[in-house]
Length: 205
Image (tube, one colour):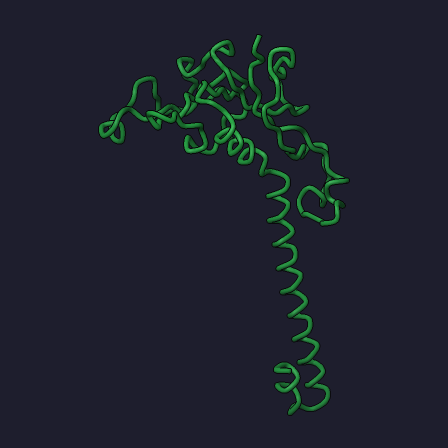
């Protein structure tokens, strides 16, 4: 109504030109909003698996050591690690050796000096620190995903059983625009390729 009343006092040609412009503007804005929502939904449905897996880890697992290898950069925060009921301390996070050859994170030193002191085995060149690595035999839980492009071998299913898995987009085997924008009613899911992003537990003998 506001658009129509604003153009009612104009000559016919100018009125229709203004009305056409307003309609086109509304369509452009609506299309932009639709694409933005579709893109946000795609990021959620395609890449939310790490957060969902760590959330499940927090509520389902004990405070046994949690190991992460090639998926180190998707580890969200120590707040997602299970907490010991008595001490409130988080479960140990251990790094496994992978094809990454940079410097992995390490915990802060004890409070309060840990916020300002330079911890040992650190460098300012982002070069590899072998002291960060732990052995797979030290792990009770491991977070991993298997993608065709990765060099690391998968965990042995005879030794490791899935504790919680979520679907994670295999971007290399999924085509545009389906991997970039979410189309409801199962259309995007039917055209994309997914793998299992899992936290696995060592089988008890």
